[in-house]
Length: 201
Ligand SMILES: Cc1cc2nc3c(=O)[nH]c(=O)nc-3n(C[C@H](O)[C@H](O)[C@H](O)COP(=O)(O)O)c2cc1C
Image (cartoon, rainbow, N blue to C red):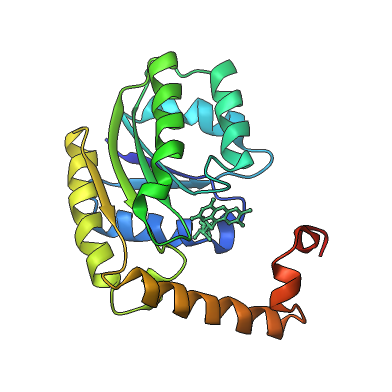
């Protein structure tokens, strides 16, 4: 039976989550079916879910929690539960260096699963998720993805994590330079980025 992949990134079509979902599909021994969440397809995905015994939710960490796209989907799922509930696995990435930044968001999903009777499957927590895929360190990611995919297909409740194998200070320096250059390209100074006014930009 195929594995359902739901991409719950608010920027699903051009998201890192999409790339992580593709790598998962490459390593998954079973067929995968991919659905990016849109504003209008939540009920359709809930309906389709009956046909799958396993589901992977791939999403980014937003403000130490779940992005609102995923919260909306979970609300729809609460109201439209499938008669057969799949094992839910979690593939989460965050911008910060430490994979443990994702822990609270994983607990939130685990609680949802517990309350609504979905068996909880495997977890892969990715730190430096915005960067790792475009560095030679993607090898480390792929190695963990392979293990995660094996746990998903065998229905095992195992947790994996991965980040770039560098010192945190090196990561901080490189990422700060990256975002300053990115801001400059878009006419935003580091001082502006340091204020809440950036929200209105
Ligand atoms: C609104 C917003 C909030 C975010 N909050 C966090 C956070 O709390 N911790 C963190 O490590 N990364 C945070 N990030 C970074 C994202 O998790 C990271 O960029 C991720 O790779 C985005 O994945 P996506 O392209 O699949 O959406 C945030 C990004 C955005 C846009």
